[in-house]
Amino acid sequence: MQKEVNIIGAGLAGCEAAYLLANNGVKVNLFEVKSLMKNDIQKTNDLGELVCSNTLRSKSKKNAAGILKNEMKLLNSLVIKAALENEIPGDDALSVDRFGFSKYITDKIKNHKNINLIEQEVSEVDYTKVTIIASGPLTTDKLGKNIELMTGNEKLFFLDASAPIITKDSIDFNKVYWASRHNDGKDGQYICIPLNEEQFNAFVEELKNAETIKLKSFEKEIYFKGCQPIEQIAKTSKKVLLNGPLSPNNLIDENGNTPFAVVQLRQDDAIDSLYNFVGFQTNIKWPEQKRILQTLPGLENLNIVRFGVMHKNYYINSPKLLNRSLQVKRNKNIFFAGQITGVEGYIESASSGILTAINVLAYLNNIKIEQPSRKSMLGALNFYITNPKHDKLKPMKCNLGILDQQNKNAKSEFYSFDESEREIRRFIKGINNFAKIGENNE
Ligand SMILES: Cc1cc2nc3c(=O)[nH]c(=O)nc-3n(C[C@H](O)[C@H](O)[C@H](O)COP(=O)(O)OP(=O)(O)OC[C@H]3O[C@@H](n4cnc5c(N)ncnc54)[C@H](O)[C@@H]3O)c2cc1C
Image 1 (cartoon, rainbow, N blue to C red):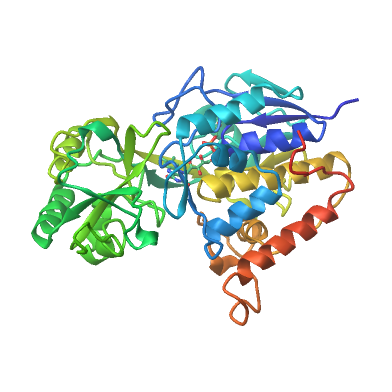
Image 2: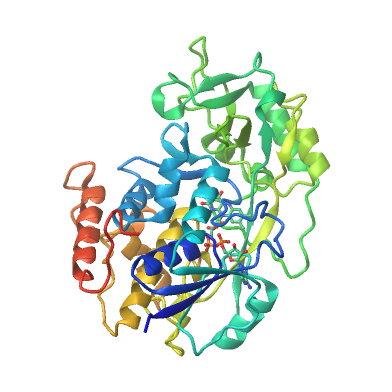
């Protein structure tokens, strides 16, 4: 009889897991609620939606995100395929047309003979079925409560925010210029809004005094580093702004000058009509957002198509609840994948979907497998989020610091990349008796 798995959530992790399992002959029931009930940041009915920025971050072989994406590609990632098919200019980053990206994923999932997409909210997990919970940082309340009951554990959360998106035709191009940080200012792919010191100081004051949406009393201000709202950074330090979202480094204008500060806009769609603010996650009230952004040179008439918003991000205490196979210790039929496990970010969540699916496949085949080691980014993330030493897990993005690569200083600048690739190839070889991971295995 055909093996069967339920997956809750058709986001990045759920779709990756469904794709891998279905490609390996497993019948997948993929449950997704968004066509019936959207959360505040979902905009379309398509699957694998990118809810905020449209970038899967750096392509560099020296960067943690570049290393993880290469590992995912080796593992036949649906998300990487969708991204490469829908890539748009983004300098060093893999930026995508978010609509084309999700459409690609949706088509692959809906047309797969082994995947049955079921549009409904799951409020109770059926423990008798092998199940992957991939319901993400905005898991519905009913399911969240059911997960709490199952785990007997407190749910954790941190606050996250998204950045506004504007139309290109509302920008005054006489006041901005094109440049790319990683390309010596040539062949610019980002719209750069130059600020002199006075303009920068005035903008920072606006951000500091901006009226923000009030948090509910139970939402203590817990921000995850890397997703801090811009107004919060402004309150903390001008230096952090100048070294971060408003850094002018390498953004040389047409006259060969480097401005005091630069606000960057990144292309957001394939037809080049929308742009998002780089590093401008915000929780400022919407009319205030518009007023403050309009003070920037060139944006006096800006047209915002999506405002920045802030959200709670749920995740479980994985070190306590899950074993290294991302399986609930007290209920072997139940697995978790994606951001709900405590990884943070698009590619981290998607890659976790791949690893969980491989573990589910091993479980269905009654095979014990060795997880990828910490020489790979996938293995390092998995080790981090399931490490019992982290009794209060803090969400983790991929980064070079979590890799266990003893000789990385002694070797070439691409040592980590090469070492991680070797590790993933070794891992794939080790599971090829039950998992088909080939490039075009569909
Ligand atoms: C506001 C915000 C901004 C973010 N910005 C970025 C960013 O710019 N860059 C980045 O790398 N990461 C960002 N993230 C993180 C990113 O969203 C996640 O890392 C990623 O989408 C998580 O993937 P996932 O598959 O785990 O969950 P999701 O992509 O959220 O998918 C989960 C799916 O489960 C569905 N679902 C939920 N509950 C149920 C239920 N009961 N029954 C059925 N279906 C259900 C949801 O509708 C959803 O489609 C952001 C997150 C938030 C909340």
